[in-house]
Each structure stands twice: as C-alpha cells, then as structure tokens.
Image (cartoon, rainbow, N blue to C red; front, top):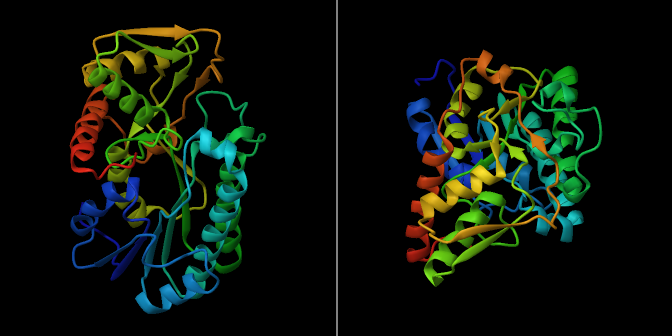
Length: 319
C-alpha cells in the first residue's frame, strides 16, 4: 500500500486509543518516508483553549488523522450526556478549524453510526443521515459528532479545505474498553462470559429475545481501509465503513460462548426489551471504492478474546 500522495508529517490524535492501536502499525508501510506522530490524551489536552493551535504549530503536520474522542457504551452515555456533547464538540470544532488555519493539506476524522436517525431504514445508507434525530440515549455524543459533517462541508465550500468524515459501524477488537459501565456490547459480552466460565456458572442471562440484528465490523478491517482514504478520498460526503452483514444477537451470544469456552446455558430474559430490531449499514459506497471488511465474526471474536485474556493477565486491559 505504498502512498501515491506525498505527506511529510502525519499526525494521529487518539493514537493510543482503541482504533488508533490498530492504525498506527499500518501507517509507516503505507506512507514510507513520512514522519508518523502519534499522540495520546496525556500529550496535549485538546479541551484547553489554544492547545490545538499550539500543538499544530509545534508539530507542523501536513496531514491530520483526528481520532481523539470521548466515547463509551450506552450506560455511561445515559449518565453523562453533557460530557459527551461538550468534549466531542470542542475537540472536533477546534481541531478542524485550527488544522485549516495551520495549512494542513488533509484532515481525516470519524463519527459513529449512532449519529444516524433512530428510525433509519436498514441497510442504512449515507443519504439517510439528516432524515431524523438519533437515538436519544446517546444523542449527546452522536449529535456532537454529526456536526463534523456540516463543518467539513462548510470549510470545503468556503476554504477548499480537504477534510473527510468516515463512519465506522459497530467496531470491536483488541484494545477495546472492557469496563462494564463504559463498554459496548461485544467487549461486555466477552468479559461476562469469560468471568462466568472462570466461576463455573451453569447459565448466563441475556436480555430480550435474541432476534434483533446488528452489523459488527472488526477494528483491524476498519484500520486497513484508512490509508486508502488518506491517499485518495477528497469529498465531504461521508462513507460507511462496516461489514454490511446481518448478525442476530442470538448468533452473537452463541459465538461469544463458543470462542470463550463457556459451557453453560444461555437464558433469554424476554421481559427485557429488544430495542431496534434491525440496524445494518449500507456499504455500497465503500465497496464501490474497492474496499471491504471481510473478517468473519467468529475470527474477529476469537482474536479479541485471546487478546483480552492476555491483557487481563498482564493487567493492561481497561476493566
């Protein structure tokens, strides 16, 4: 994946985060000769006034991949919507604005599939983004991230600034957050099944009927598409990055059970709501660019589980 676009200094914010850990090893090979600068939250506080501008003046990147974000599962979003709204809106707004002012040639950033309207029809295409309001439980986060689309468009129209916004689906994989209050569904399930296995539990309770379907994408697949977008994509039209495959929650639970080695039963508590019955991302635009996310659910879950077990033993996993 040698680069056809020359960048001398590529800055990655959030490089020590979940998706950043998957991306950073790929960049030196994709952009040979470029300085790759990865930053974590302790390097620069992007919420402090003036810090994004100072960071860009000190590091002088010509390409910025902005992955720093405040993210989490539905439980913590419900408890702290103001934090999710404020921190994401502030970081994103100032990073894009100051990158334009600093003469950055390419700005790449991300939003979540939760920014789509709660009543979007599956498969959810990029053209449905403005057809309604997102799910209320995570609206603080999802609306703040959604503003990136308007900002990218506005700076392209007025300043001809090459900024792009990508929309990964329900991402899972190594280096995810396994804290049960903050985790998304897959890391939470993996941790619960592993701990139930370790205790010798005879059963695990799952909420709902197991009939709803979702679209999960392995983080390594998402990261592998990013060098292409950095090199080639020049549009403020967003692109879904996902597998585009329907996986029922029941199938997910059974596969997690298999890869974790839990031998008990799965008991479905049908008194609990199922939530949205079908949420699948339309990947026609992604596939039309020659890009695919093909890792199977079982392979991705196995890699994630193996990493979780190693990291738990080493004390490096977020619990």
